[in-house]
Amino acid sequence: MTNSNDFHIAVFPGDGIGPEVIAPTLRLLDQAAERVGGFALSTSDCAAGALHYRDHGTALPKESLDVAAKADAILLAAMGMPSIRMPDGRELTPQIDLRMEYGLYAGVRPVKPVPGVKPVLADPRAHDVDYVIVRESTEGLFAPSAPGERDGDAEARETMVITRPICEKLFDFAFQLAQKRDGLRRVTSVDKANVFQAFAFWREIFDERAGRFGDIAADCAYVDAFAMTMAQKPWTIDVAVTENMFGDILSDLGAALMGGMGYAPSADIGDEHAVFQPCHGSAPDIAGKGLANPTAMILSSAMMLEWLGERHGASDPMRAGALIRRAVEAAFAGGDLVTCELGGDAGTARVFEAVGDALAGVSLEMLND
Ligand code: ATP
Image 1 (cartoon, protein in one colour):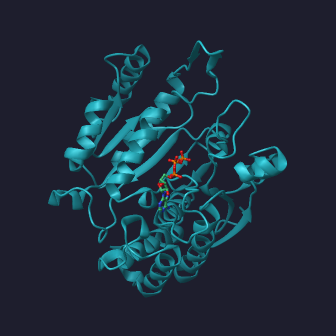
Image 2 (image 1 turned 180 degrees about the vertical axis):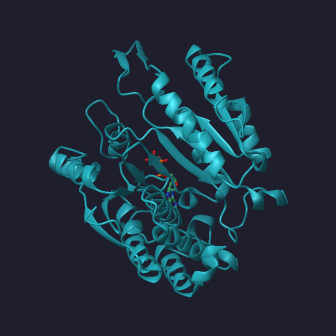
């Protein structure tokens, strides 16, 4: 950061639809910063991804990591390509490597349908759904400290790692989030403590940390039952905290319940760094066709502004984040903007145009509400 009102953003366009959704998002960010005033954003493009691996032999080059390490925030679109794999058959996942590199333990996955987008659930209460899945993002079944093993054609194993230091920080993060939200003031541990000792340990620590937040209710649910709750009565959820793999799966369910991957934003937050990226991947099936729904990318950029504002005690970036949210809501409000993802005819460019127009029209006074 050069001065207290200038923020430097490391931008990872990545693969597939990534570059298609991130370039116009950067223009919206500039538009929002200009309208609100009081701060400025500068950006550096960082090379990374499956295509970079194919062409240069590395998916996350050191130069990009160096830029990201110094930036105030990291904005990432999508990485990975099923057609480009490592010798052991796995896909390249530099977005996961970034979480490990910077200790981004709290994956924040809001599930809040955009008003005006046809709700997937028929119950009228589905309009009021507004909860957050906090996905632990550095260990669990993805822990690099316990790489899987394969014994030829006979057997393959993975290990789930749950550690006290990460759990304590994660649970505190979840309870503090519930304190900040205008929600039901409850944190739910989503686990499988009836079967796995790692989750019994997880629950022990959850109960300990819950005791420190007397103003927030705490309860626990088994992951299978919780998946049903997400589909049957999601309006009863406030903040749900869960292990990495469970969070990976449940947040895609959450995205589907919002209308699709293109509506689901996210943030991966650590003590010093944070990455903001849509929940979706590089979607190679629609890349290059102008069909991608950029809403998740746009809303992730709003989360970035809000995080920067909160972290630096600066109200202007927070107002710009709110402005982008309002613009998204205004663009979809009439119900006429139906994305290709939902069978409509609004491709990437149409959605950006609608959000950009709305952004120019939203009253700045409304942001104080
Ligand atoms: P990853 O594991 O890297 O998150 P994934 O395997 O979950 O990726 P995605 O790339 O997210 O896969 O794609 C899943 C499906 O969702 C695909 O059919 C894709 O076209 C669709 N999809 C993903 N993102 C969008 C988007 N922004 N707009 C429209 N459809 C999308």
